[in-house]
Image (cartoon, rainbow, N blue to C red; front, top):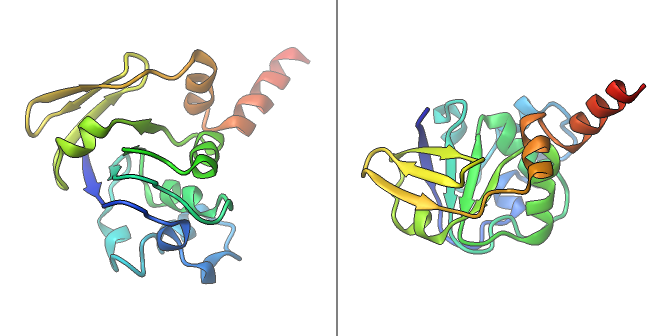
Length: 164
């Protein structure tokens, strides 16, 4: 199913994703209501479940806290496609079940408001608006399993229950 994309430039910090004043919040939907509040006020009200974030280089640099990826998930973002990611942000996203895809071609070939479909298993992205296809290296099976189950902790808890 295609989802609308939102586009940002390079060097989006975790503090721009969610302001430090919200670090005491623990409800991810509440965090999501404040996503990008300081650089794009009101954006969270326009995000529909599954929308896709397109970003340039160095997405998520700064703090290693999980609040930034949790806020994006709480806002309804279903995947992030970037030219490059800050290492800890990338890892935190995978841990919470947020697909993070490196694809410069998709970012350069798509505009805000385009509708994209992402197939994590085949490594295909379709820009439904412009009728363009992009490829990315699919995740290893164990990462796809984490993503499908909502994150690392949920996957481990589910696997532990099946072993007992």
